[in-house]
Length: 88
Image 1 (cartoon, rainbow, N blue to C red):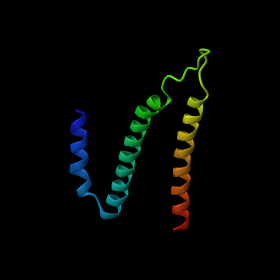
Image 2: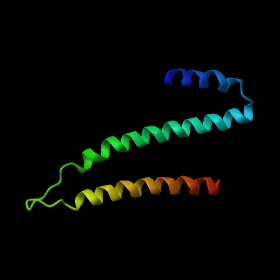
Image 3: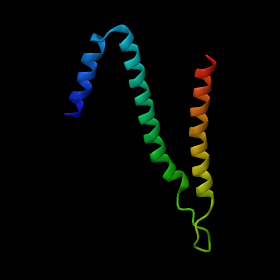
Image 4: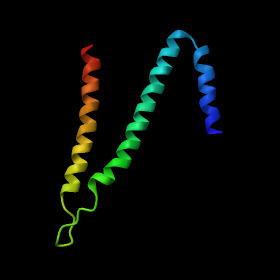
């Protein structure tokens, strides 16, 4: 059933008007990139943080810093993309 929805999109998009076609294609590409990036982050961040328990049995703060760096990187790319749209 899910695969049929994809085939419906493939069948409908070429029939659309040219202006609507470009907006829809841009939206679908952005959706694909966002989905793949989110999936990669959700799979890689737990591995990067790993079991970081120090000798005393308490959690190390490096996991917090790794998560903060990942979140900062995502925000930084978002801001750079918006600034590029503003400048052009």
